[in-house]
Structure formats: C-alpha cells, structure tokens
Length: 361
Image (cartoon, rainbow, N blue to C red; front, side, top):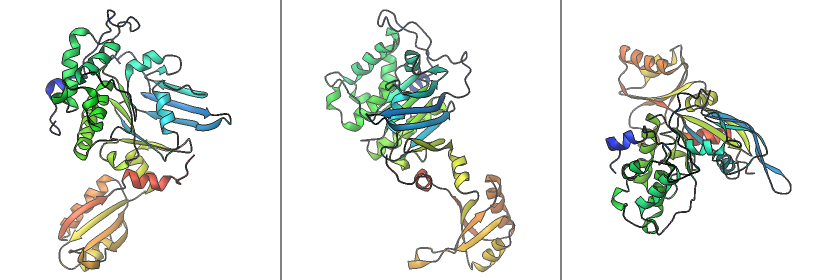
C-alpha cells in the first residue's frame, strides 16, 4: 500500500453504520453502533480514581488513576515496564475487573455495560491469538459476523480493510503463512470491522518493519481525520512523536501528567528554544539578538570538528508561536542574513525522561 494513498471506498468505510444482523448473532441486537448524536458526554473516555490490586498482598498495580480523553484525540499512554499500562488497557477493553473507581467510555460504564462498550471499541493487544487455518479474508469476515455486521456489507468492508492495511494481495493466504508484521496489520483490520469510535492499541507497531510503521502512522492519521479516537501504548516513543496529540505518563501505577503534547512541553519549559544559522560574521546577529526584549539567552554553538559550517545560535525566546514567527520577521527586517530558522522541540522520549524517575513497580 503506497503511503498516503488510501482508496476512496476505504476512507468512506468507517462512516458507514453497521446494523446488527439477528440471523447471525442473536446476542447482538440491531443497533446503529456509529450513531453518536444522542450521547452528550464531556469526554469519550473518563477514568476516575481507578484502582486495581493483584495477589495476596493486594499490591496496587493501578493507584487512583484519573484522566480523560477527548473525542478525536490520539492519546499516547506511556510508562516504564510494570507501571500499569497493560492493566489500564485491559480495564478499558472490558477484559479485567477493577477494585474501585469508575471508568466510562462514551457514557457507558465498562463494568456494568461491557457489551455497549465493546460495540464502540476496537482492541489491538500486544499479542493476540489468530486462527491460523483461516484465510485472511475469512478471518475478517468471521469477526464482522461476530460484531453483527450485515451479511451484504461484509465483503466490501473486508476488501476495503485489507487494502487499508496493505494486505489485499494476501487475502487468500492462510493466516499462519503471514509474517508477524502482516499478522499485526491483520489484527488492526480486525479491530476496525465494526466501525469503532475508540481504538485501543497496546504496542501496535511491534514486529513491523520501518515502512510498515510509517504506513501504520498514516493509517492512524486517516482514522483521526474521520473522527476516531485512538489510545496508544508503546515503548518506542519515537513511533508516537509524529502522530500523538495528547500524552499521559504513568509510573508505579500513578498518573504523572495528562494533557496535550503542547501543554506538557510548556509545563516543562515555559520558553521557546530557537536555532538560527546566519551567513557571514556572527557578531552583528549576536548583538541584535542579545538586545531583543523577548530573547532571554543567546549562545553561539561552538564549531567543534567543523560540524557547524555556519555561525549558529541557540536562544531562549519568551512567547508563543506568534512570537517565534515575529522574531524571524524582525531578523529579516534588520537585514540579518538568516540561513535557517528552526524551533527546537522536545520529543516524547525527552518529555518522558524529564517527568519520570525510572522506577519500576
């Protein structure tokens, strides 16, 4: 599947409403599982004081965890091993009972209305069982039937999903013959057969090659553009950098921070860091920047080993995005020969390292 080229039918697929099919699944009453107009909720996901204990000692794996996820967000849920990520994900997926607190998805409590939650949720575990003797398209058709997708819609939905995840050329191959990366993509397609509002993915990029990881990020962006909310957990934070809009950090079962990526960055560093390269002598640029009222500090990057061919400054700038843009305009007006101008931004990895202590439960 070429990156960024998704079929028009695949784009439209997730806007369809899939009514239940009583002839296939008696336990799934007919219902428009895509309709949201009649549900007025402050956030799609609301977790309030969630606690989960394990073992005889009743040790807290999740300790009064509270956060919200607004509809349409791509929420990166990160933490060290043993922090409580998978426990939280399994609670959201209605697969694990909890001891206290409250968890709502689209207004439904996960403990008292699990079937309603499952209609709205697509779950991608870090490892999942596959029916190896099924063909790829049979596997998706089977789960479409389980979710009550109307029989006349299944083939077109399955075909579009296979195209979306780049497996249309393997539709007639047995699942056991697929590579780990292909099975992971098939699992993503399986999580989408019922048009969920919320996608919960635990290490979704595990086992994927570099190209497949890029394509997976592209798929997540397309799903977000269609109004899907995506909850991602991953140890490879670089994979989330270009796609996440919000971030939650958990350590020792407790929430460290939960907010938009920009708000987390602002919390850690209340100034902008800008990198500027100029032509010619750095003296005039340094003097001009040093006297600018919004510039807190200016440093000339040392040219060690000849790896900085042009004079380069790192500076701290007070203000928002508009201040960053305004400074560039002022430099040009002052006839400072600017060669490059870049705002340096923390990656998710650097944010994570700044906010956690590296303690494993």
